[in-house]
Amino acid sequence: MSIMLKRATRILIQGITTTEGRLHTNLMLENKAEIVAGVSPGRYGQEVMGVTVYDKISEAVKRHEIDVSIIFVPKNAVFNAVTEAIEANIPLIIIITADIPVTETIKLKNIAEQKNITIIGPGSAGVYVPGETKAGTISNEYIIQGDIGVVTRTAGNEKRICQSLYKEEIGESMVVSLGGMDVTGTGYVEILKDFESDDNTEVVVIGGEAKGRLEEDAARFIMESKYPKPVIAYIFNKDSNPEIAIEKEKLFREAGVTVVDDIWEIGQIIRESTTDES
Image (cartoon, rainbow, N blue to C red):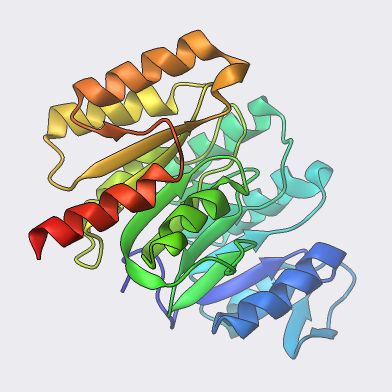
């Protein structure tokens, strides 16, 4: 069982009456998610897939215990929506909406950190714990329950890594999408710490990108902490900035991370290692 989410995790959907909110509320419920409430201003008393809708989070928290809020609101409403969730002391906030101004993300991150609240995103596909729950838009097409922790950035890249694992009939303990923006609420380091503490995770796969500094932070953390679990890394879209991509791969290798050039090698390497052990 993941330490971030479990089957009993109580989820609030902000923007539940939007087209995307309705669609993914249904898909999350199909994946056993415990969605206890939704929020959409002016829609008080309505229901979406049997989930009661409130005007404000303050109304929802009077009637429900909430562990996670998922943000599906339009980008011009994200700042206020996240601020409202922070004020309600919701421990984990996942921002699905993309293209949020960097200045807003930084402000929200700073406010959340003061209250020990975790923000994932913006532009995240969410978090998926196979066999337990799903919070976000991550597709379950190539996901099966297993012991590989997957963490990527841009939404959709997690699916490509899971395809590589699925081809070798390898499953995941947890899949996390950080978001593809230049600044995100949570980086690889925080998720690596979660995977380190998770008894169900044996190997971690990082889907990196040739932009930003999150990969450099991860490599430094892995090296300095003498990270105890095997880590495999793949850099997406290397052609967009080949020099930076090469430098990031170099840093990962120096930290003891297995770096692959072909995404399909990920599943093959893990399968070969388990075969050797047996």
